[in-house]
Image (cartoon, rainbow, N blue to C red; front, top):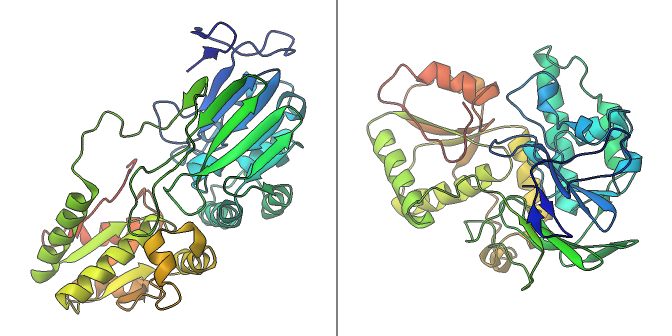
Length: 376
């Protein structure tokens, strides 16, 4: 979407002129747009330029994994061309390129995200870099020190807090989706934009629904991954998934559920734990160790970001202390008998989930459940 705030008309294209001296298109897509990965949008209004997210495309290993900053300037450092950067949540397709932009391309201006997003995105990016290094695919990638230096420069924004940077006014609203995710309302003078990032309008097992004040922004920028898909209710889809898992394990099969270590993994664990208790099932549930274990600690730390049910019951029972879910070891992949394994990464492109898939795929009694978007 490219939109002219002054005439309130769409314009065909935009960018900087040959001298890179002034921005011509108020909304410029630097990544994503009809694609999942490297979400990055530059908005200009009232002479101010705000970058919304700075993601990485996980399906590329060359420069295409980064947003195309050459649309902003071809001279390198971005500090003179961007007034602030806002990160909506910790998924790598929304934050993964931040160390590259800040430490390698060069940016010294303000960066804002919520406290959970700052804490979790850093460990996700560090983990991603470690995996690429093990595969010898980290040539030219930012270093661990660059990740540290980048996040040392990040400022935190709280829900409903108003941050003022000169003429720029920023307010964060609850987005659901994952822990710490927010939507941003941005105003400069008489013009305003709402950027939703990824959001959920219905609550789930561990997060509440997105919420924002009534407002009339000049432009709404929103994710639309499933905008043209008509789906059954969340409860119907959850029940269908649980019934299918139950059918497979009753027949002695194994179930693989590829998940992102933070967010979907915890939601599915809550669903399975409640179903296991209700049905008195003794078949083991396994979750990949490492990142998922860290995730549970973050959910305990940031319990205020979860839904009302979990917050109210937290002091009586911590639902993130799972009774039926055990840590998974690779030696268990060939173990006899039924089991359910939640393994990362959710995209199934590498790592433990890919390893288990290759091991189990040849047995027609086994099943794989894809609980979310998968690029493979």
